[in-house]
Image (cartoon, rainbow, N blue to C red):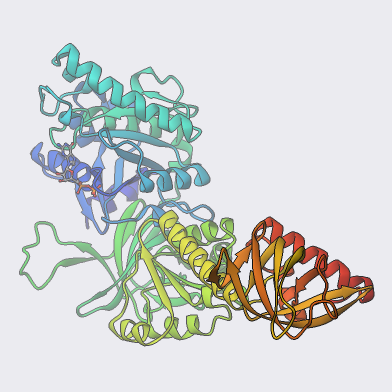
Length: 600
Ligand code: GDP
């Protein structure tokens, strides 16, 4: 049995679950490593317990690490459980509805870098889920002129700094406090915060020198004890409830689940219900696995089998039929309850995060249920319809589905934090389906929006190129250069664009009469292919004779085929210049006097 088993078997208060979020490279991994490493180097046996996907730091160790900042007698929570699966797991650990897994979060922000896209995303999730958090303002040791005080609490390290270094750091910290305020959080340096429910505490620290880490632990412990004690009270022997962090193939076990258990207990042999791609999966726990302490890399056995695990803990579950299980999905132990009720409970929780799909739209793939939900929210906000949304890597089937999308701009796969399987890559190359892939949601949405705009612009340009454009022009007095074959006259273009090779009409009463076809345009003696409103040019018209079909002073129009007039009015009216639109409107008005539905 591991420490956590014995601990939880007797303790009715569980450890709060802590998630670490932040932009890439801001120091999440370093911070977790440091907390684990310093705990271990404090030298006590059982200083930490390594779980699957998590590290448990007992109160005693927290207290040793935090020194005078944490007196163990002030606390009755058993310690802290840090979720330490690396990568972009904020969407799994913090879900907007259903089971938000983490009780509290550390948002890591590099003091040199401030808020970055993934910081903003993490903030959005924290806001939506109402998860309490502290900000670790990391890398304070990079302040110019810094005098490092390894492992010291922040006040002590502050006192050892020059005035200059201190004010440089303060400047950076206030920038972060300002950015938090812009995001709607009232924040301050943690020692100035009275009420952590109303204000976000900022802890300056360094994951390199450990300065400020005692403070971070003290704040986390204090916050949990003060505001979360009630939520930490669990029925230690009740049926276990948890969330899948990852679905992983393990040699000898097939597909296994890395789960963080936040309630009750799970035992080998328990019947469990797990959220799957299609239906909830009902199966039986074959083995519960914990990492082997000090496992050698080459050893065959990387795990120890345990009989039971109590919340809060990370554990690997081996069971049949887990291939369709989804990261982010709920896991429930059935024990002493009707199976149908538990299945229904899991189905309900999944339904809350199921994504609205439409007849036409894009294909979305994401690494976890939580990130899929976040993607769906972002796409809905951007009014991008979804044809299908699933958890998992991009497979050939996704390419096939995307290629059935009706509109060209929907023949797209948006992949968040997923791989492209080799077969799918081949199919992508052979199809018209376009792939966008990123691990920042807003970037994905922006890239896609830009792509759509580009396509639409290109489409409109080709349409505009092929379409006849409206124009109105008038034959000038004393500007007949040739009577006929072709008639050559000077004109002033009143509105629109006159182009060569187009038909010319003249209105007589309510009916248009075709007078001929434009066969040449000259501007100041030079041949041109078109002329815009305001210009005076001479034009050649095949067909009419000046003095018969046309006269000096006549107003002439380029003839618009009805279909073209319709496209111009309905789809391109914002793309054409104002004078051309005016010519179009006047032309339509003339037609509609005879036939109100012309061009509709
Ligand atoms: P993650 O992507 O958020 O997990 O960031 P990492 O923990 O991998 O850190 C990114 C880089 O920043 C690494 O090169 C770390 O060594 C460095 N780093 C992290 N924390 C600190 C710190 O407090 N001070 C300094 N100087 N470097 C740090």
